[in-house]
Amino acid sequence: MAQVKIIFDPSVNSLTVWFDNPSSEDVSTDLDNDVLLMKNKDNEVIGVEKHFFNLPPGSVQVQFETLELRSQDDLAGHLTLQSVKP
View 1: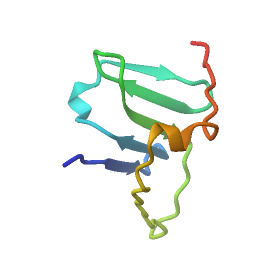
View 2: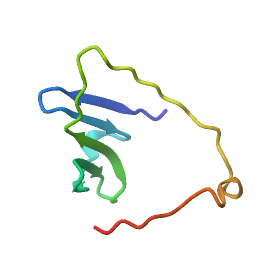
View 3: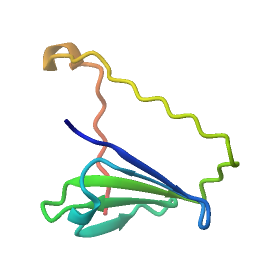
View 4: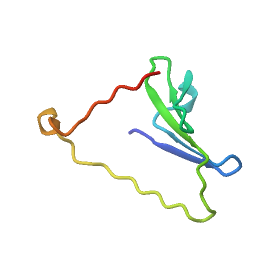
């Protein structure tokens, strides 16, 4: 079973979400908008970190949803691909 790990660090106001084991991080990419992407050695995104994320004490509510699985045919016409320059 996949595990998602969410960490809020109030000392630096950062919110980190890991989609894989944090120890497999190889490199971080700064997106220039206070967001970092953490990647493994295969250049796959395994986490994301948002800086300057203010969260008052006691105000955390986490909601996790799993959407219905769709086929590629169902998704045709609903996806827009954007290229991001490094």
